[in-house]
Image 1 (cartoon, helix red, strand yellow):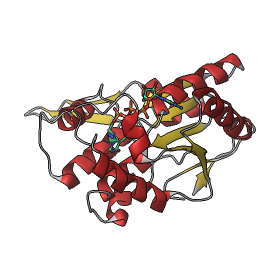
Image 2 (cartoon, protein in one colour):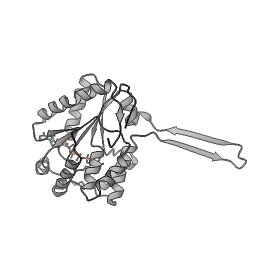
Image 3 (cartoon, protein in one colour):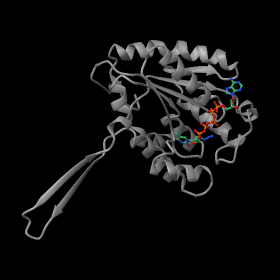
Image 4 (cartoon, rainbow, N blue to C red):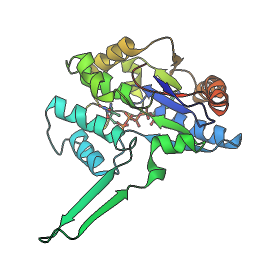
Length: 239
Ligand code: Z5A
């Protein structure tokens, strides 16, 4: 599904295993696009700054325990809360019913993905729905069930997949204490990413030197940024 055809920013998503270099490359891509004069922001999921994000953070750091489906839906909710406008209607009915107040409150629109894109800001996003599906299906959940709550979120203009063998990733700086930072689990996640990857993804060998990867990412995104500026319509998951 697609909508409108006005100039907008591009939605660029970086995906990959833990330690594949997403954070390093996202910042470099941001600097590159800003240097070319494009309004650009760096986003990441999970967004641990929201109340949903705090629940996710507690789960990832093993401070809380949640059922696999519950945490999957929380990760998805964390994306939805950055996608839509919340409208809260308060109806105060007094006994005489002579007075009724309706208050509509909108959350800060500037924090929303669609608003920013339509304002012309390109978003470089470190992890998105594909992480949600890959990590949850690696636990054994049905892939279609995992995709369902993501339907209707904005589809990326390009997915940049930083491809690294799980063993190599594990050698980089070592894993911390977070829940998914285990080699055997990362091997399953890598297989699940393979199942999601299609011809629209740009797969980059993440074992190359940082500067080489940086250059390849720059080359991969420019056409998409220009196409969005020319009015490529927004589209929605799953295409
Ligand atoms: N998760 C989920 O289950 N469902 C969801 O919907 C979402 C996420 C969105 C969040 O982790 C966890 O939540 C994640 C998936 C799950 N779990 N895992 N695993 P996070 O986002 O907080 O952490 P991360 O994404 O795994 O980030 P990371 O560990 O910081 O890795 P990275 O960003 O990909 O890599 P980096 O920080 O850029 O680099 C790691 C190290 O490698 C660092 O020392 C670099 O200097 C080095 N590096 C980077 N590139 C190179 C190259 N090319 N050569 C050599 N060394 C390099």
